[in-house]
Image 1 (tube, rainbow, N blue to C red):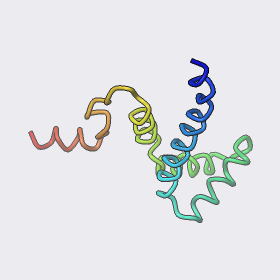
Image 2: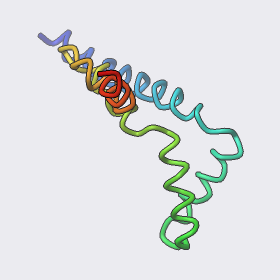
Image 3: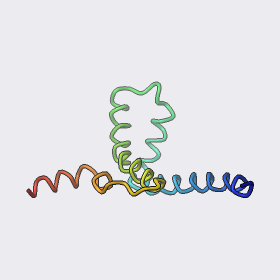
Length: 99
């Protein structure tokens, strides 16, 4: 029992590293210039103009936050997630059009 308690922090660190690697994969969707701009906008988030907020939302949508959340949940879930969750909205739209 005590052995598993001592190992618990390692598994927490492992989980954090796996999430960071998954986030890195999603951040790859942005160019270096877009990543810098997004970081700049995030640092000044409280004082953004409406145009800057729109730009920030556009950059954030490129990161595909839904796909990131689903992949993270699938990675750590003890049970496999349904395929419809993993494929996303685009696959659902294309499958409904083919009917």
